[in-house]
Image 1 (cartoon, one colour):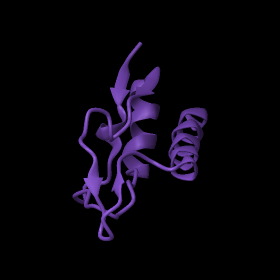
Image 2: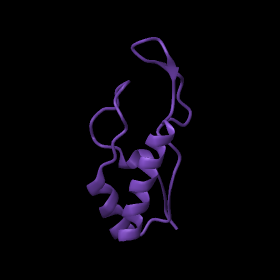
Image 3: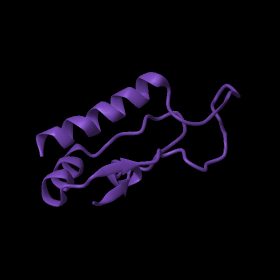
Image 4: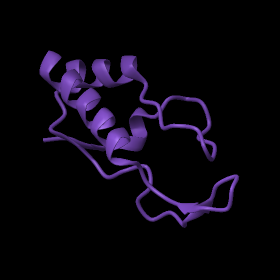
Length: 81
């Protein structure tokens, strides 16, 4: 069974503070179809330091809504394969 880190599916655009993490939907679907991967692991924020946003609030990771959206997208691509 193949496991891939979720960062493999990140959109090619550089991730900048305050911008949402965006999955490359095409890459996600093609990878599931071609390689029949078993799981997508980790988060983009595993092991990173806290970052200050433009108003001085320290933050790291996704909100609950962002996390559910990312997971739903991965699950949908998995079901299609």
